[in-house]
Image (cartoon, rainbow, N blue to C red; front, side, top):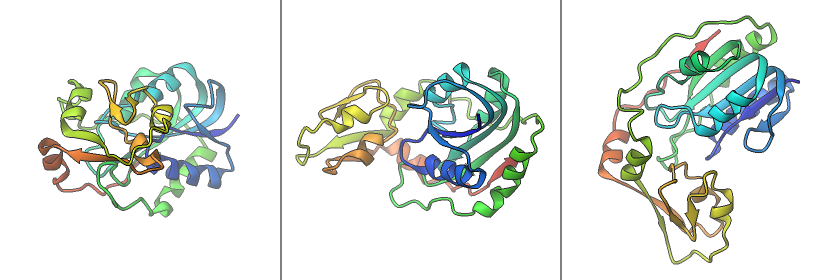
Amino acid sequence: MNAVAFYSNTGHSRAIAEYFADKLRYPLLDIESCGIDNYQNLVLVFPVHCQNIPRAVKTFLKCSASESLTVIATYGRMCPGNVLYEIQRKYEHSIVAGAYIPTGHSYIEGDDEFSDFDKLTVILDKIVNPSEIRLPRLYKNPLANIFPGLRSRLGLKIMVSNDCDGCGICTNICPRGAISGGKTNRRCMRCLRCVGGCPARALSVKLGLPMRLYLSKKRIEKIIIYV
């Protein structure tokens, strides 16, 4: 079975996955609902979370198998971390191609989406003619693994307004059961799926000073491709 699988909370990674699925004519699968399977050629697209691999992606990689794996990590034009190297080191998949692709940042409203798809054709060629590669180790902030959830809570707060009608959609779509009635708990990882999915637009975000300072840094536009 060939497939393009994705994990996406705000739609940035899904847009990249849709490109690969269309060009390769592979089925498009959401890893949160597709179940575990064995794949011949698998393209996996996901966002970097605080320079780390999202929990859902770790679970998927641990339980699934593939003969040829292509890993595409999207990042919000800040530091992409070292997630591709970590995937190759920790999971038993034969990686044939990889990339870090800059997309809009989830915490910056109106941030530009990735549009330079022509540069990704070299990855398509490698998927069709696979051979295993070794991924290099990149820079990762030494603080990235220290209480990422706490740092996220300090950096951003999800606010609920009087427009909330108690529909419960935010609770149903939250991947970690971290919100009820528009109010988050300690399990919240600030993926903002609830904010984007609220039909009443009753949820908004408030950035703390540490996050505002972080987002004011010079943006990174570099596409890094490994074939």
